[in-house]
Length: 331
Image (cartoon, rainbow, N blue to C red; front, side, top):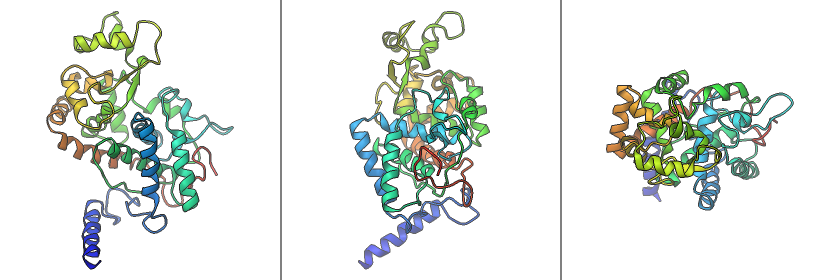
């Protein structure tokens, strides 16, 4: 037992060095060990529910990653995306980038109910989203990172910001860089976080423009590889079929790896916002795509780093916000 204690001591020291909890760190009052004593089962509960949900539907992993991303880009990582509409505000779920596409709310409800049963009024919905995003990546074969915790939940959603802050699938590279910079994220973060598209699906409506009318001239996007283009046309016809889906990473759609970047190099990126990372005439993003395509370890390292950075966008802490009992509504 003494030797085990020594191992745990060194492990905790390693974690502390990676994410120091002093006031001088980059994460304010967020730190990974927050629930170590107040809710030691938190990580285990989140992971166990996710394991079951993703085993039933592997697409769910990408859905939780997307929920965290779409939450953080709208007034910060505050679980506002989980709020149903009320007399006080419109729901972000009904905004253009989310309507009929964000999913996984029932699983978040299940996680929250189990946490409330074991440690009431302790773990926020915003922290659940951050943990669910990390665990979904791990369960898909991607990197692990310590998640700084301590976010609180907002009392309002922001429908308007959800419509303007979340990058559209037809975004130009300049638009992407601008939207990420607005959140304090740089080009390294943009390319690494876009790599989250190594898992998941997109609806035909998100990429139809590339197939039939990329520049308003009734012609396809010339950067699309020919065989890939022909395959996409069978999924996404010129009219109708808007809700038909195609993998964002056609080679390994449920495995978190660096194949997404290899596909970009081969002209097989699904969304315009994917392919412009390579073809958008920005030297740095092009270099990063090629680097991540060649070296998965470099991508994994930067992805984990950028996820921690994204998870720290304007969190509500201390006396701000609340810890919701039900993630769908304010207390």
